[in-house]
Length: 362
Ligand SMILES: Cc1cc2nc3c(=O)[nH]c(=O)nc-3n(C[C@H](O)[C@H](O)[C@H](O)COP(=O)(O)O)c2cc1C
Image (cartoon, rainbow, N blue to C red; front, top):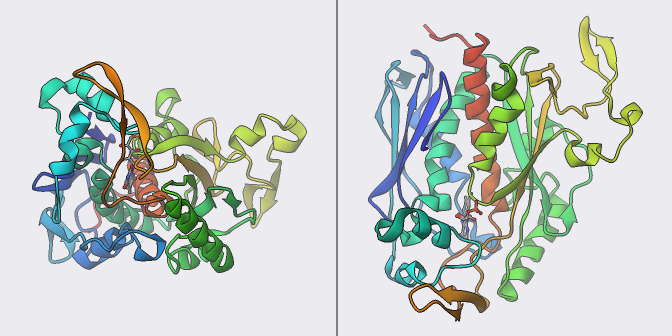
């Protein structure tokens, strides 16, 4: 469905080439200080960058339709809207009968029949993540009241991998200063070149976003199906293009021994800490007070300008397809702020559920 969350509930609406996209965020405590400029700043970080071969798109402008008055939330559902501009739906008509490889055209048409809206990817478009980012700004403000911070960066882009251990305080600043959202400016330059080379060849790249959340107290997480990992994974897998989510050592942990993977305990400043963080800050689905450490794998952008094999669903015969128009050769840099927002929304919801964030900020 289009709603996620328990006490902080996010509902998405709209489509890529309709009047606009937006969300209703219900459960935001009254009295939270938030300005439209703060929300806009986050949404601006989702904008494609012309430095990596994406033609400059018009900026998305957020409108706050309800739930905020005089830069404070009122306790009523927050309604955010972003108008669609600059849309050309004519190219999408063909995809109803000739589905694009890697896109939802085939499965969406199979599910919704002729009524399906495939213009600009319809409700499957990455554009649906714009309101997620806007809502994420509010979730981040909620978390900040409890001293919880989130920052993500591009850890891998194609074959280029950032092998360094990174800390949230460094990542927050550096990743926003380059178009690929890398933590290292030197590597950022290599990543830009890698994207340009793929684009030159009519191809695309994927990568990994690493997201850190610091300041989360021990004890956030609910039993079994609502474990912190389960809730985060559900949200993160909802982001278009995401094909993998791992926590801490994740799949690497499968190849380790217990003696390597176990995070041994110590007392530090009077608190229980762990020497390593292979658990990614989560034990038994409950936060353990260490940084939450998540890695999110994005597939290479589906839209590539090379000719590809497809099928004509009306004639039921093989054909070919070439996708033209404006497309990101790599969506990973734009995915960084989306991953931050998605993580913030889940953590804020889970903090409300565990009474780690006050229901009202008077
Ligand atoms: C911010 C963002 C922007 C995206 N832009 C594009 C794009 O320009 N071209 C494209 O092929 N896919 C893009 N995607 C991914 C597709 O929407 C997605 O791969 C497609 O709908 C199929 O869904 P799936 O990959 O989750 O199976 C984007 C995703 C995000 C998060």
